[in-house]
Length: 223
Image 1 (tube, helix red, strand yellow):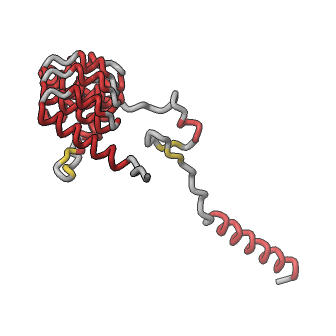
Image 2 (spheres, helix red, strand yellow):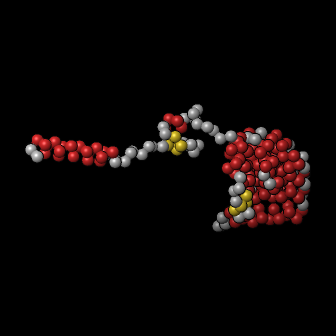
């Protein structure tokens, strides 16, 4: 074998192994993006809201199905309540257990800023209005309650929340009205609210406690 043949043979050998090595190089992995809605795409621009599918309400509800109980509370019901509030759709509240429907209707009413939504709660409308009034601190919702017990409770709770003694005047049941004034008297340390109490024993206790609190707060006078 002459020198030229040797050079050609070596060159062809290197070329062959070089091609083989190049063919065995691993392919670069394709990059994928996960969009906020869970879709996987090749190009990040495809995550644009106009090009990705939005879940329907039924698809969202299917996610709730089969969720477990945690300490006796149904996560499935909680999930449905969240979707009902998100879409402001009180009709979804009928899909959950009876004992949690009032909360569902009240939350939908709150997201809509409309206490009239509580009408959808049927026989639980007053409870829904009471919940709405407390959460939104809306006295007008108390005014719409029909049953005296819930109506009085609504005014009582808002009086405590807002520190508004005038709301005690709206309470019909005397014992609860007295309790309302008692609480306001303690809150503002003002014995004049004790005078509004009807029950003699409760009034005396109110005045006594207010007097004791006042004597504790006032420093002794040194002569």
